[in-house]
Length: 200
Image (spheres, rainbow, N blue to C red):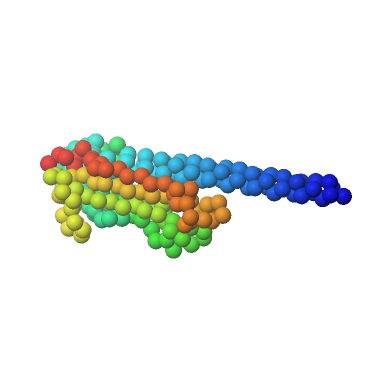
């Protein structure tokens, strides 16, 4: 009789250990896929941002933009608007980036994610749902000094710093406080310079 009871106890322990290992494997797999998605989203968004911002003040027909320093129209901490020849067709385009409000993505479990908007000329704005929680810009003059907000004369901007953070919209177990590294990733470009802004 004792042997049977002992067998049940051992079997119960083995069952609990198996369940725990299975749960651990699921958590590890979910965290891996979350990080993979975050890195993919961040890489995609950063590639587009860098490509666009490096074109500030560029125009295939240089006569249409004789003073590239006037190509930056708005320089704010979460907004930037500038002129460039986006399609390399010799015509100037207006590009406007800004960060939306968290209330616009209230259907996701994450209370902090937002749309990042991009508007080209007068077209309907694109809104990117990459899980962006931070899109922050800092600006520097030709001497490398930080330019204080509000920037009333964008022509003094020589370079900029871009900070972007993305978080998972729906992480495993919807945990947003215990282990932030499992559901968020951060990127910063220090002193990004458009060659045309140096044309002074």
